[in-house]
Image (cartoon, rainbow, N blue to C red; front, side, top):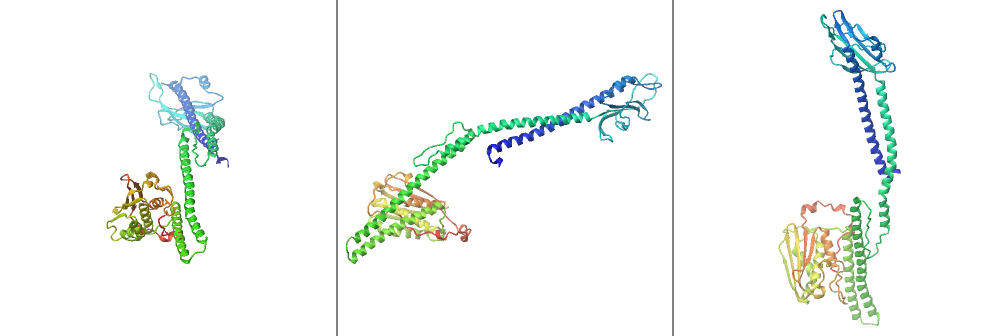
Length: 498
């Protein structure tokens, strides 16, 4: 299709606009020229009428026209005939009349008007005349009695005026057509020259590398100023794309590394158990260790799956009423023994909220709490303190987890704590079950609930996590149609902390 290219569209648009403007200008000029030609014709008719009026004199013996017939005949152009008639207004007796167009009846034009009246008259053969008529009283000489009313008519064929107007329009259209053809060539050349940067931009994009570490940007020195915002947004998109690729590659590598650790543990335990015959008690201990590693592996895989579903927006969120203190106690229960073993001072401050309890995403909130508790236990020195505060700050549910003093090897920049597989302790121990995906999962869950999460260090050796989650009211839950959600397999698993 000819108009599929931007160049052809611009050329066609310019030419269509130029053609419309040209036609409008030609019509206006033609109408204006016709009006000017008619004004000149009217002026000519009124001038001749003025000459004849000045030649009329009323004497005692009647009205005389002091205009010889020879002079009157010379006033007529034989190649462009016109018609003039002078008659008595009362009786209609003709005093002076042109030899041409005598068959025309113009006796009523201007009969009752002192000033010239101009109008068009159509002849039986289709021709059109421009006629002027008026009555007047001639100058009187001494001795003349009474006033004699005269009727004067002057007419001229308007064919030449119409022909000249049409010729002007035709010539103007022809000139515009030639101008548009020349303009089309110039516009096409100009557009092609100015759109050349699109080809350069396309070639530049095709040469951009998306390899890791590539920081190339698209810069065209000769590009128009209007294209600069597009190139800036394109460069920003490339930066985000490179960052996303780096994060994806890092996530894939870290996930593979994290999965390799429990798999290697499984293999080691199995090989050790099969290295020599063992008693039933030893096989039972080996199976317990294998089950423990399998539980670790299962929780890690569940966390990865949940994070992927949240990123893809396919995770279903179920709401149910449950007192928040019960949620906190249920989430803390799996970590009670760990806290006792490390002699942590634990304080749970849960103000009465939601009485009666409002519907909340309990399963997701439980995952959030468990990961926050696990993070606090994992990076607090033995004998330290952990404080959990839950309160309602309308319209949010606020959960704060404070711990300190933190272990020296867990100190890392605040902006990195939410990165997947980010851990303060870089060295892995054989019994470590902390993968570093917990806070990344917490942040993604909070964002999926339209909430906010922030990490801070109130003091050098303390760490604080603060979560704000909007409260769902009964009427908001009632508006949701459970039948519209077809992703039954996306129900929240009771994923443990990783």
